[in-house]
Length: 236
Image (cartoon, rainbow, N blue to C red; front, side):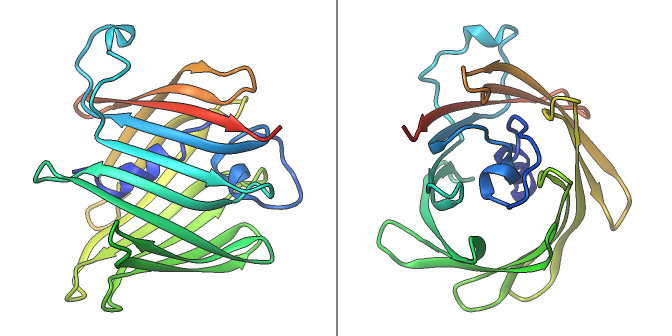
């Protein structure tokens, strides 16, 4: 099962964009051009020596489809991921906005049952707090995300809880960037025992617009590798 922090890491591994005065989701994730839709698939624990030998139709552990509006914000996100039982968990997250900024969201399964909900509170122009709740209203996650001058995410404080309210995770996640704005590494620090985990990013290919189409992520501790593949559709 892919951990929450790993999903965040994969979800943010995209190319850079130039600094602009108005924040959008595309800026935060580093997309360039007038992106309309992104299909992202993640293969975990890649063992092939040559990445080019991995079949294009390989079974993936996580598949996500982002639907983006003309303002550059994500209207909805369809996620399909393999859970510990081997079953595929599918849900749709729908975002709500206020003054062109994410304000809240709700997640539903295929039967249209609400699975989770989230609220987003902007503390400053470059920092926001997000809280995620179980269906019963219990707090599941809370994060504080900080953006740099280009509105890219560079630090996230994460706490997660079980339904009884007991703390499961207390960590800090940090991204480092190249001069081009590509992510170089992603570091997670366990704030309870101060241990760290570092993953290195390698952008294998980009499309003609400049967005990455293949990203290899290697965990420093055990050399395990994830491969992220992306396909884009653009507004005319």
